[in-house]
Image 1 (cartoon, rainbow, N blue to C red):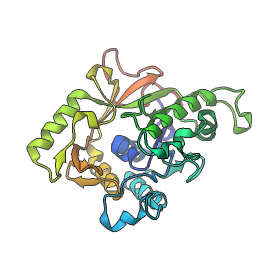
Image 2 (cartoon, rainbow, N blue to C red; image 1 turned 180 degrees about the vertical axis):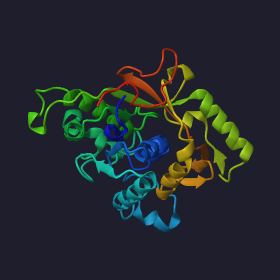
Image 3 (spheres, rainbow, N blue to C red; image 1 turned 135 degrees about the horizontal axis):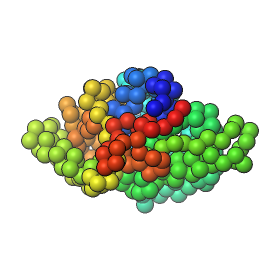
Image 4 (tube, rainbow, N blue to C red; image 1 turned 45 degrees about the vertical axis):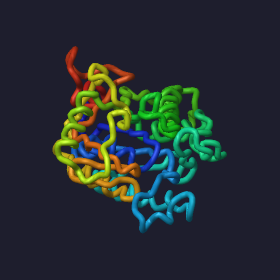
Length: 295
């Protein structure tokens, strides 16, 4: 098993706030344990809908300064999680938020959705060669729920993992590195159902309630290979989500996005191992993303 101080976890997300919603407890846990936790965010989230009336002028259709504001929100969220290494793919603003699937923003020249995958992956190869992570977390091929930037983040992350391991690719960036384990973000259906049951019973103060179809990455329980108990870090996760104030409203153990539909905050976070060997006994879920990997 890898020494705690030698553990290196890389997470690749599309927009600021995705990391806190999906992996906040996982990031806080490993940061607290002394592991190196690095977040790479692919866009500034410029096309997000602003839920705070006082900041509505930041939106893309008005001042178009939301991206710069969300850099600050992300930094505040990372402080709550104890994560000190957070970067933007190719630097802040290299790739622009593409908006939801089917919108005209998808076709902008600098939209992340339009980026050449190999070119974008090259920026991530540089990070992988520098940090040499043993574990990588990103989205599934559908991007969790079909957002073009999430799909593209998946493509870029998976491609970068391949390129970083190829000695013939960008040798000036250092020796090749193979990431031992790659995980996709998931939510087991039974956990989602239980979370919504809690939400309905509590009567959280939102105009409506989302559905399981609104939660990215929900799959049958059998597809889950790893479960991280984030209970001790649930408060930090909620605080990180609150830091993304233009995008998320938090009410106790629940939250809502711009649609004002309540969703449960999951303290436990779940994953599907898609590359590498599970470190858990046969038929059991891992409780450590680094289980079974070397330094």
